[in-house]
Length: 228
Length: 129
Image 1: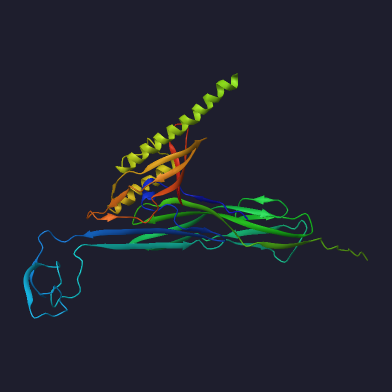
Image 2 (image 1 turned 180 degrees about the horizontal axis):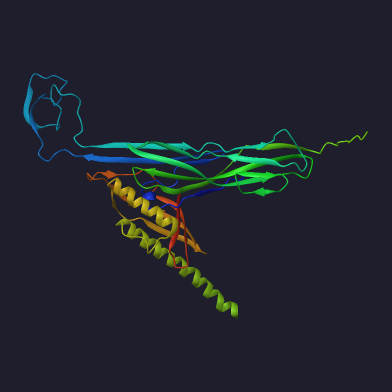
């Protein structure tokens, strides 16, 4: 079974931000994710006017191998270890603050059904219906309001006798007494809205299949009219 | 003899198409870097997407530094394909801190364009190049 997936067009800024082609999966329902990933890199450099302090250390230069004499000097903070210091901290370091967040939403399924159900006689009209509930999923993404919306935009029926239909509701009869199948496909449009911005419409258009309906089409029963 | 005349013409047309779309994409990169209007280079879904991104980085208060570059490898019948290099593009937030998104520096792109080389769709894959 081939499923149609049309990725929305991207652009340079989204590509540079790594926001093109966020995870999408389509099988019996559509899953769409808005991904946000930022890496904040802040270089912290020691200030130009370094503070100084009185520093004691042993004459062999260490703070842990005692000698009869020790040296006391007025040194820049962090320039060397002093007796009583905690393990050294680098004065220059990089902080990587990674922000990763994503909002994933699933469309839900397309449910097909038919009436009257059971056995269907040749030339008896059956009613086929597929239902897809439009859905809105809201949550927070990087601390901002984000919403994903799934909307059914088109319907397609495929019947095993070759007939096709393009509406959610369809009536038909079969001409041959044999097992038949019917399946609907629902076109889903995905939109999203982020941080109070207008809706971004049609970021994804995909088609999901409904459950497969199996129909047992039988000959019309012979009815004998007895005339007395 | 006719074919001998036609072949260079055909080759010339293909080369010209590649050069024209390369120019359009390069202009797009320059305009996008300074958040300038893009109507002269983009149309359709590509323009809609770019406008949404303009709004997004304005709302996030980011500024862009550096230029992206397109390297068109093939261009025919309104469809171009090649390598997009965003390695030089960086963003800074309001405090001036560097935002380094986690994405490949170079990835494969495809673009569709109309007869006036207006880019109507841009797709960027996660596949590196």
